Image (cartoon, rainbow over all chains, first blue to last red; front, side, top):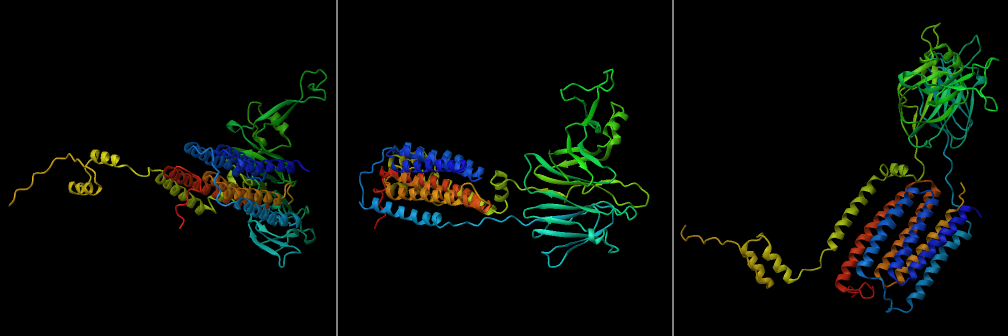
Length: 481
Length: 103
């Protein structure tokens, strides 16, 4: 028996015991306290059901407000001692208990014994989008697969453009790339890349590389993993890919103040922890240079799988840094100065939003003329369409808020209105039932004259109370004018 | 996907609590006790809703529970105000004594 099942049985049993105690207790205050215990057990059960928001609302609203209101009224009315002496119908207890047990058995026995298997939700179909990061002009992308009746053709995909997510059934698909202008395939048809998609997988297919017939190098396809699950608080998830061929190993870092590359100097230690010295005279320690911990994504090897990392939100100055010769760069530069040569591409004012997933791809722009060295560029530098808005965790307050104020906005407003009506109703119901004659007399005497004097005298005649109205009397008008 | 505690267990627990609440409504004579049993029944239905929300992976069950809790709060406020008003005039909250409307 698992720990969770044992916990459920303990808390469930305690809830039932509290409910029975509430029913059988003589004192109404004890019944209310038993019910508070029952609500606490139900709040723990809500936590077991992945509903943290509902469980906290249960404790705050049900036990904290509703039961306190019950206790107020019990104390106010002095109704602790319940008088159950008179019983109208003797057969009520037995028949009610019998019917209740019959209902319970009728519902639970078929549910448990018949082995009903509630169908569970299947994994969602895989989604994939295609990004053109290769050193070519616009291409046509053709996706063929055994599950597709006719191949999906994405026409005229411009460099640095990404398609929307395409939902496909799980399986293996062949992706073919042809130039949009000429229709010529970019790679040998036998070497078309095959991607396999599984259920629940969200990915980005990046076409990278360059077409060089002399060197027999063709563009290739890489599959980057994406996910709609949210990153940790106040952070964004980065899926970073290096598609810039000249730089074999890169890192995406946040530059320090004054656009400087913050490096960390570390002495190399041997296994026992002693610092290693270079020459036999043992005077100069061997140091290792590494970037500071403001690295957004490291280990970006060309063509290898993407690096997945998280970074807190904010607006930073970030840069792609060449890692292969970092020590050489630092040694060549002025120790006090910045290491400008190691920076491949600088992105000022890079905005990072929380609860998003950003796919960052560094690629070479297609050359406008022959003979010019390839220039690095980040696809979607304004990160509009390569940024995913992640979905909050199931049952969290953020997720409930997202659903409540979009799909359920009308019921929320109606419930608010209902609360307002209940508030007014409670105030009306709590007014004093009736005022005595003495009070009415006093109120009329001290009230400013809001009713005309003749009307006041008519009312006083009908209600039989004496009315003294001490207001100045007008002189009756002269007859004739 | 398989859960450690199956949804059927939560439904059976919810049914037991609901039946206990129904028994309280039928058998107790104190009006406030009857009210508390109604709250117990509402809680049992909330438990069933959240169990099914987990089963189906949708947050609609949680939203429904939220609305049920809000309506229950409004109902408790109005109902207790009614009981206080009745107590003022009749000086008793034994439901056997509150039979003015029988014909």
